[in-house]
Amino acid sequence: MGAKLDVSQLTSLGVRITAAGPAAHAQAQAALGHTAYAIQGDAQLIAPVDTGNLVNSISTDIDGMTAEIGPTADYGIWVELGTSRMAGQPYMAPAFERRVPEYQAALAQIASGAF
Image (cartoon, rainbow, N blue to C red; front, side, top):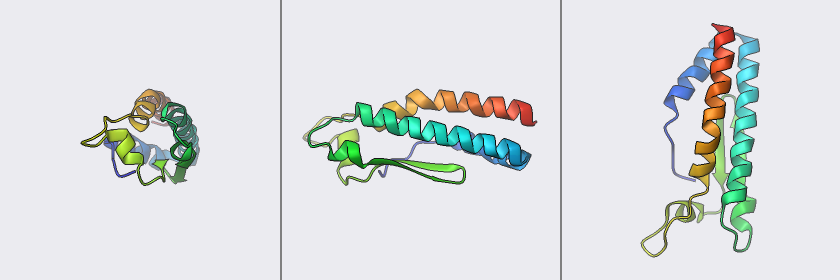
């Protein structure tokens, strides 16, 4: 989508969990997958619908402990942030903000058992 959110603390915790061993790493990957797909689902519910192309283009790609969630529609960023002629209609940021606390709690629980 082009917009990036600072999740450096989560990334750092993810790295520490990965170093804690295979069981903790597997649990963290499962938590990431659950959270990423929940963000995708929320964004699809929140996104404005005209033709349905934007909603249908929102997808998730998980690679290790990294997840990319967002639309492939080239105008998705402009819907989210707005333009000089149109107010933004955020759908990714609210979905992210709703689910990240759950992810943080899951990682904290994993970390408490791993350290």
